[in-house]
Length: 96
Image (cartoon, rainbow, N blue to C red; front, side, top):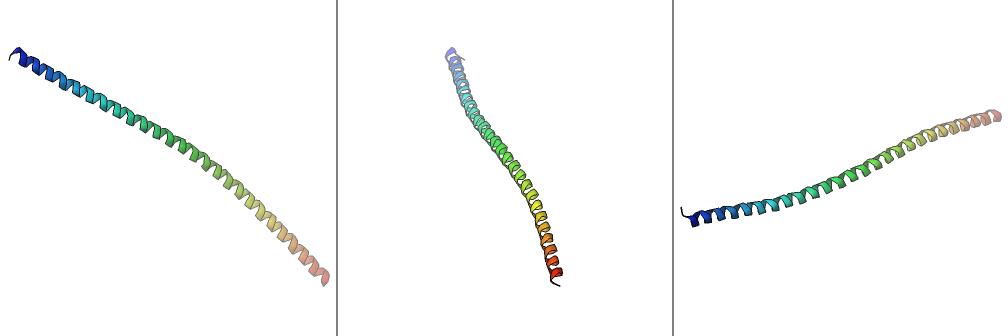
């Protein structure tokens, strides 16, 4: 092999190597960009999950308060119904 052929092959190898390196750098940058996008989406999803969890806890507390209020109102209703029934029975006894 003559010197020019060796030099030509060496230059060709260097060009291929540079192309691969440049192509690899481009791929690395693309992958870094995709990773950044994925991390950003993950961060937003976590923030959304945190907000939804907070809202769910608020709703659970609200439901608990409503159940307590419902129980109280049912008890008051029964007490008032009993008072009314007692008064009706007293009025009925006085009329007789």
